Image (tube, rainbow, N blue to C red):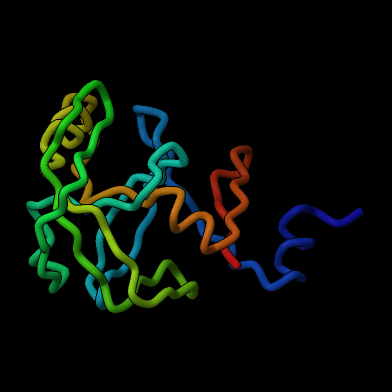
Length: 145
């Protein structure tokens, strides 16, 4: 009997390790326009997001959006949109990915309160769907195709 890993790798999926942190979130490393960052992997976030504090670090120019963000008990957050030329997670790549940009201070304060380093943003369901992601919670990894 094949393992899940062998089965998925035979189907050309890429295995990406996840780091489980004290808050039970998973951190994942990604490169946006060639610049590395650490993100939370969040299956409940419909869109991938970037914090206002780091959008320029990734070479992005945010444009005002009419969309209001909500999450973690906060609603009506002002947002911007920014399109990355390329997003790379290990060997998986996608071009022209749009991020919702907003102040992630409340998210990072919660992480810092749990003695977890702040993140640049959130990898959400939009990326997971594009990557045909399969999460292996038992092995703390995700597979992208």
